[in-house]
Figure 1: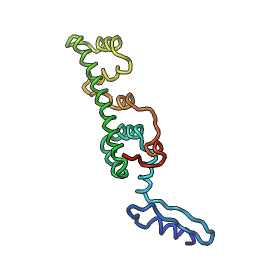
Figure 2 (figure 1 turned 90 degrees about the horizontal axis):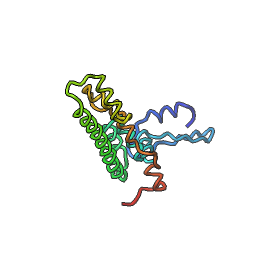
Figure 3 (figure 1 turned 135 degrees about the vertical axis):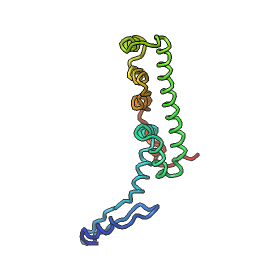
Figure 4 (figure 1 turned 45 degrees about the horizontal axis):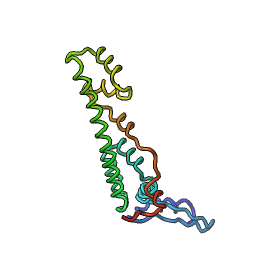
Length: 173
Protein backbone atom coordinates (compact mmCIF):
# COMPACT_ATOMS: atom_id res chain seq x y z
CA UNK A 1 0.00 0.00 0.00
CA UNK A 2 0.92 3.60 -0.36
CA UNK A 3 -0.54 6.52 1.55
CA UNK A 4 -2.80 6.94 4.54
CA UNK A 5 -5.92 6.02 2.57
CA UNK A 6 -4.80 2.41 2.71
CA UNK A 7 -4.42 2.57 6.50
CA UNK A 8 -7.94 4.02 6.81
CA UNK A 9 -9.25 1.14 4.71
CA UNK A 10 -7.55 -1.44 6.96
CA UNK A 11 -8.58 0.22 10.23
CA UNK A 12 -12.21 0.53 9.13
CA UNK A 13 -12.46 -3.06 7.88
CA UNK A 14 -14.33 -5.54 10.13
CA UNK A 15 -12.33 -7.47 12.71
CA UNK A 16 -11.99 -11.22 12.30
CA UNK A 17 -12.51 -13.57 15.20
CA UNK A 18 -9.44 -15.44 16.54
CA UNK A 19 -7.06 -13.24 14.58
CA UNK A 20 -4.31 -10.93 15.77
CA UNK A 21 -4.81 -8.17 13.22
CA UNK A 22 -3.25 -6.92 9.99
CA UNK A 23 0.20 -5.95 8.84
CA UNK A 24 0.13 -3.02 6.44
CA UNK A 25 3.14 -2.87 4.12
CA UNK A 26 4.02 0.50 2.58
CA UNK A 27 6.01 -0.53 -0.49
CA UNK A 28 7.45 2.90 -1.22
CA UNK A 29 9.29 3.02 2.13
CA UNK A 30 9.37 -0.71 2.85
CA UNK A 31 7.69 0.08 6.20
CA UNK A 32 5.38 -2.37 7.94
CA UNK A 33 2.78 -1.33 10.50
CA UNK A 34 0.85 -3.78 12.70
CA UNK A 35 -2.83 -3.07 13.30
CA UNK A 36 -4.08 -5.22 16.20
CA UNK A 37 -7.74 -6.19 16.67
CA UNK A 38 -9.43 -5.09 19.92
CA UNK A 39 -10.23 -8.72 20.90
CA UNK A 40 -6.56 -9.66 20.55
CA UNK A 41 -5.53 -6.64 22.66
CA UNK A 42 -7.98 -7.64 25.41
CA UNK A 43 -6.70 -11.22 25.46
CA UNK A 44 -3.08 -10.00 25.55
CA UNK A 45 -3.93 -7.61 28.39
CA UNK A 46 -5.46 -10.48 30.34
CA UNK A 47 -2.59 -12.85 29.61
CA UNK A 48 0.11 -10.43 30.70
CA UNK A 49 -1.73 -8.77 33.60
CA UNK A 50 -3.73 -11.54 35.25
CA UNK A 51 -2.96 -11.80 38.96
CA UNK A 52 -4.78 -11.89 42.28
CA UNK A 53 -4.06 -8.15 42.53
CA UNK A 54 -5.65 -7.39 39.12
CA UNK A 55 -8.71 -9.53 39.93
CA UNK A 56 -9.12 -7.72 43.26
CA UNK A 57 -9.01 -4.39 41.42
CA UNK A 58 -11.68 -5.57 38.97
CA UNK A 59 -13.96 -6.76 41.76
CA UNK A 60 -13.48 -3.57 43.74
CA UNK A 61 -14.25 -1.35 40.77
CA UNK A 62 -17.09 -3.24 39.14
CA UNK A 63 -18.00 -6.37 41.00
CA UNK A 64 -19.04 -9.64 39.41
CA UNK A 65 -20.17 -7.93 36.20
CA UNK A 66 -16.59 -6.80 35.52
CA UNK A 67 -15.26 -10.29 36.23
CA UNK A 68 -17.76 -11.89 33.82
CA UNK A 69 -16.72 -9.45 31.09
CA UNK A 70 -13.07 -10.26 31.84
CA UNK A 71 -13.79 -14.02 31.70
CA UNK A 72 -15.42 -13.64 28.29
CA UNK A 73 -12.06 -12.57 26.82
CA UNK A 74 -9.85 -14.90 28.85
CA UNK A 75 -8.37 -18.02 27.26
CA UNK A 76 -9.90 -21.22 28.64
CA UNK A 77 -6.63 -22.16 30.33
CA UNK A 78 -6.93 -19.07 32.56
CA UNK A 79 -10.47 -19.66 33.81
CA UNK A 80 -9.56 -21.92 36.78
CA UNK A 81 -7.04 -19.35 37.99
CA UNK A 82 -9.64 -16.60 37.67
CA UNK A 83 -12.41 -18.56 39.39
CA UNK A 84 -10.24 -19.78 42.28
CA UNK A 85 -8.83 -16.33 42.99
CA UNK A 86 -12.18 -14.55 42.68
CA UNK A 87 -13.68 -17.03 45.16
CA UNK A 88 -10.76 -16.45 47.54
CA UNK A 89 -11.08 -12.65 47.28
CA UNK A 90 -14.87 -12.70 47.74
CA UNK A 91 -14.46 -14.96 50.78
CA UNK A 92 -12.00 -12.45 52.32
CA UNK A 93 -14.38 -9.58 51.55
CA UNK A 94 -17.35 -11.36 53.13
CA UNK A 95 -15.30 -12.31 56.20
CA UNK A 96 -14.13 -8.72 56.68
CA UNK A 97 -17.65 -7.35 56.22
CA UNK A 98 -18.97 -9.87 58.78
CA UNK A 99 -16.20 -8.98 61.21
CA UNK A 100 -17.07 -5.28 60.97
CA UNK A 101 -20.77 -5.96 61.52
CA UNK A 102 -19.93 -8.14 64.53
CA UNK A 103 -17.80 -5.37 66.05
CA UNK A 104 -20.74 -3.00 65.58
CA UNK A 105 -23.24 -5.44 67.12
CA UNK A 106 -20.94 -6.03 70.09
CA UNK A 107 -20.65 -2.28 70.60
CA UNK A 108 -24.37 -1.49 70.43
CA UNK A 109 -25.27 -4.31 72.83
CA UNK A 110 -23.05 -2.62 75.45
CA UNK A 111 -24.77 0.75 75.01
CA UNK A 112 -28.23 1.90 76.12
CA UNK A 113 -30.87 1.47 73.42
CA UNK A 114 -31.51 5.23 73.16
CA UNK A 115 -27.86 6.30 73.30
CA UNK A 116 -27.17 9.86 72.10
CA UNK A 117 -24.93 10.37 69.08
CA UNK A 118 -22.28 12.08 71.24
CA UNK A 119 -22.11 9.12 73.63
CA UNK A 120 -22.04 6.70 70.71
CA UNK A 121 -19.11 8.63 69.22
CA UNK A 122 -17.24 8.56 72.54
CA UNK A 123 -17.77 4.80 72.82
CA UNK A 124 -16.52 4.30 69.25
CA UNK A 125 -13.46 6.44 69.96
CA UNK A 126 -12.71 4.54 73.18
CA UNK A 127 -13.44 0.93 72.17
CA UNK A 128 -13.14 0.54 68.41
CA UNK A 129 -9.94 0.37 66.33
CA UNK A 130 -9.56 3.60 64.40
CA UNK A 131 -9.70 1.91 60.97
CA UNK A 132 -13.27 0.74 61.77
CA UNK A 133 -14.67 4.04 63.07
CA UNK A 134 -16.27 5.16 59.81
CA UNK A 135 -18.02 1.78 59.50
CA UNK A 136 -19.55 2.18 62.96
CA UNK A 137 -21.12 5.52 62.06
CA UNK A 138 -22.25 4.26 58.67
CA UNK A 139 -23.91 1.21 60.23
CA UNK A 140 -25.58 3.36 62.89
CA UNK A 141 -27.01 5.55 60.13
CA UNK A 142 -28.35 2.46 58.34
CA UNK A 143 -26.02 2.75 55.33
CA UNK A 144 -24.11 -0.50 55.85
CA UNK A 145 -20.36 -0.89 55.71
CA UNK A 146 -18.24 1.26 53.41
CA UNK A 147 -17.48 -1.17 50.57
CA UNK A 148 -14.59 0.89 49.22
CA UNK A 149 -12.90 0.78 52.61
CA UNK A 150 -13.42 -2.98 52.91
CA UNK A 151 -11.93 -3.56 49.44
CA UNK A 152 -8.94 -1.42 50.39
CA UNK A 153 -8.43 -3.33 53.65
CA UNK A 154 -8.25 -6.72 51.88
CA UNK A 155 -6.12 -5.63 48.93
CA UNK A 156 -3.51 -8.31 48.25
CA UNK A 157 0.15 -7.53 47.78
CA UNK A 158 1.26 -7.09 44.20
CA UNK A 159 2.32 -10.38 42.61
CA UNK A 160 3.63 -11.40 39.22
CA UNK A 161 0.98 -12.08 36.63
CA UNK A 162 -0.21 -15.63 36.02
CA UNK A 163 1.54 -15.47 32.63
CA UNK A 164 4.85 -14.10 33.98
CA UNK A 165 4.94 -16.53 36.88
CA UNK A 166 4.82 -19.35 34.31
CA UNK A 167 7.49 -17.82 32.04
CA UNK A 168 4.98 -16.97 29.34
CA UNK A 169 3.50 -20.48 29.27
CA UNK A 170 0.19 -21.81 30.45
CA UNK A 171 0.74 -23.95 33.53
CA UNK A 172 -0.05 -27.62 33.08
CA UNK A 173 -2.82 -28.83 35.35
